[in-house]
Length: 157
Image (cartoon, rainbow, N blue to C red; front, side, top):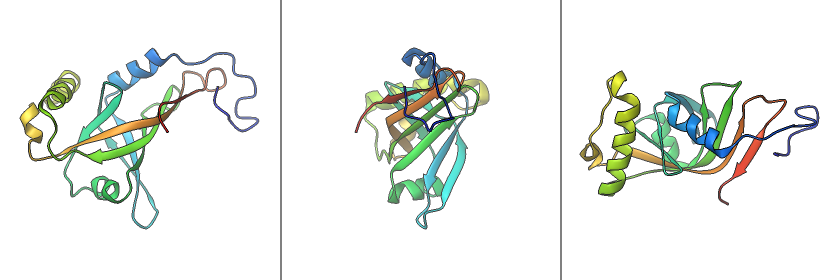
């Protein structure tokens, strides 16, 4: 169980399963991407993103505020839309200049599966000149009911 301040969760009775966390990442349409501006101000923006082989991928112009922030500070938090059934990912993000062909194919397929019905169905070659970002999760805090099952997964140092 995660170490939470006293009175937040005094006696958790369960924990969240990893399979539930992955399912939430795969199914969520939107997530909130939080970065840090050069002057230290936080920045949050809703993004479409996909979960592929334990990493999160999203795309966008290098001119966006989040891309400019990430170029200077790779620290990132991704939070799915719900606060009642939460998945909060802390990690590091990086722009991918030209993704490997096999990775681009998997990420494009995940985007098409998730977002084609919403009008976004990228081809792997779309990112030949750059555009995708990869988030490597370091820790994930998740719960289905905060007072019962808050769970923290430590994935990397």
